[in-house]
Image 1 (tube, rainbow, N blue to C red):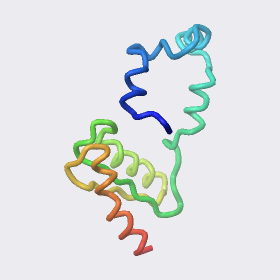
Image 2: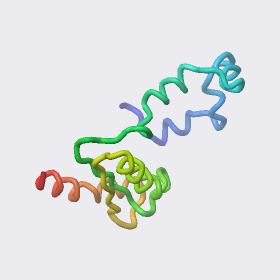
Image 3: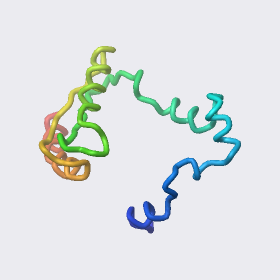
Image 4: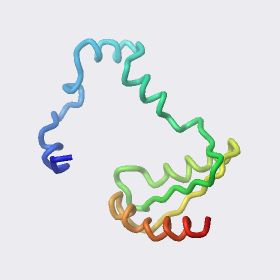
Length: 112
């Protein structure tokens, strides 16, 4: 909360493996269970199908999350019976798409 993203990025090592202990990396490299992979699997929405209406918004020029991710996720959710839809807010990057999605989200919430 008190550091700018640029300062955090500058302080991170260039090689992500330097963030972990040798024990963790040994287990990871041996494809053994690790606390991190277990937590990621528990937080995965891949097999989930929402019952309440849900919309995913994205920008067509997002470099942080591929613009193909949201339509693919909605297709998987609806294929499992979920109530999901997807909206492209335009030719925006990740941060720009968040800003431009707000009016769409507000309008949709007002319609619910």
